[in-house]
Image (tube, rainbow, N blue to C red):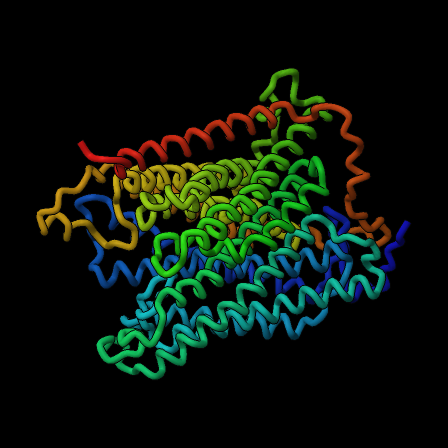
Amino acid sequence: MATIQFNYSKDEFRVCPVTSFRVHKKAEPLMTINAVAAIIFLSIGGFAALLMGLHKMPALNILSDQMYYTIVTLHGINMLILWIVFFEIAAVYFVSTALLNSRLASVPLGWIAFALMLLGALMLEYTVLFEPASTVMFTAYMPLVADPKFYLGYIIFAVGVLLAGVNFFLTIYLAKKNGSYPYDSLPLTVYGVFIAVVIAVQAILNGAVVMVVALIYSIQNPTLQNLTTSIAYSGFFDADLWKQLFWGFGHTAQYINISATAAVWYALIAVTLGAKPLNEKYSRFAFLCYLIFTVPVATHHLIVDPAYSMPFKMVNATILALGLAVPSLIHAFVIPGAMEKKMREEGKAGDGLFSWIKALPWNEPGIGALFWSILLFGFGGILGSIQGTYQLNMITHNTLRINAHFHLTVVAGTTIAFMGLSYYFMELIPRKKIMFKKLASWQPHIYGIGLGILAIGMFVAGVLGAPRRTSTYEYYLNQGVAIPPWDAGLWLLGIGAIIAVIGGAIYVAIMVLSLFFGESLPKEGDWSSKIPEPQTEESNGNHTRLEAPGTLTLGLIFMFLFAVFYIVTFIVLAQRWPIGPRI
């Protein structure tokens, strides 16, 4: 049996009074500052979301077309990149030090990484808000050309993230070398984060090609607007190749988030219930699948592009996409299964099939966060699988159904999970007591309900053909084009956005008030306390019976709904695109 060798002093470490983890004192400010930056950018992205939601509501149209695309770009960058990545870096530093009983490999490197990330983020914010040519949205497709500072901001931010990733890898190496973590396999949460960071390196290297080329091109086109004389317009630059390169970065980046989200789910069941995954081997296999299938499946963004052959798109976009659906399903059912098993082992679940759900400690914000994160992520996954199917993509591409999908997966799944974990992070690292605990337990429900309504609105309008990336639909009406009744979906979109922003504002308020005005909790635990050993598959006991019948039933219901969504979408396709001779 391996023995932990912890050779650090009280000057360097403290003992967490709650978990008995050894916390590297010099790494704590890095964790906190990255988390604070994340919440600031979440606030900016949330305000942009409110403006977009109000603008989409019929008859409001509060933004000009130019301002709308500015707000869309601002929203995408802040919510999909800045908020999530800054929070992930805070988590990276925490799990690689506290869970491995190690100091951070290089604290100065951590501060350099943060400075570069912050500089890059501020450059992005400035160019989007004050350079009209930089309203190219998150996708930033060529031949649209932004200000050079836009691409330079991306590059500087990415270098900072890469340095943070290097620090993470070096910390793991240090923990193994010094014996503070002598075990063969990483703890499951650390393993999930490790996979996320490896995917991040892939994304950054791919993104370097995209952004460096775009930077050079934008410098060569100082007017930024005169596309008639640009290289891209003249046909020198292959727009299809650009999209493929971009999504090698953009799609891969989203699976950084999904891998990190799954890791957070495992952390949340541990801190809220003390639960363990049903089968750690399958959970690790699921994380590994993300690493294998993420890059080729980026092709599903190119299904309607004529530059690629049907077999190429069928294999990479549709068939291999199942390689990403399977691990997400594993995580999404292992987590509630672990929760059910824990409730039944403690005698709190009763004899009912779903009585364990009622027995969960719903006064804990982490439980509400898990519920909405997994539920909405699951339905978003169904929509994503449909959209990745070659035939079905023809009626979903570039409609608001696409937005419904990623608002359910990345926005709902990732953001709600991160919010839930941050309530415990506040009490473990800054050691400030969460204020308004009851309101905090309701906050994930408010945010989750809002996002659910928003996604339903997007789905309804998208099914009827409402396009995405469109400021308003007045143009169609002014041209005399008969459009379907999109209004109901758009009203739901706006109402859902308002509710979700209220939930997000409550979260930000609780975090800010708790950090600055919350009760300070004791920082030092018992130095003589035993260092927690990592959970292993053996520590989870033998599986001799059906331990989570309720979760199994929910899984069967979910798969039935999966099939229904698929069949109905094929029926809609057949009605819109009849096969055979017309009569």
